[in-house]
Length: 115
Image (cartoon, rainbow, N blue to C red; front, side, top):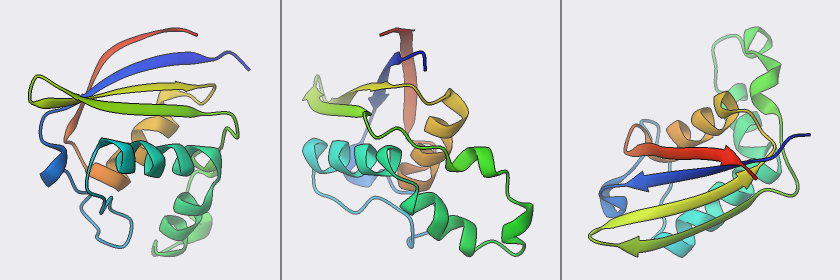
């Protein structure tokens, strides 16, 4: 599995929340967010909870449930925003879905490179 290094930016992590509070990030800082994102990528628990809440769970694209047990996430505050470094073999479609569940559209992809 090819691994990619994603560089993300979150302008206001303190107010970044997903649309549905059942799946949304509820932590207090960059380390909490990094842990929540890392866990959501390492296993499919968040995806399965979200899928079960859909009107027709069987119609959900199963590829969105992919996981990467070796995913690594770190985050830090820099110049009034949060910088997130993510290394995973998961495709951007899966990463994007987990980010939207956790923090909605409050993030921006700054760069992506082969890891």
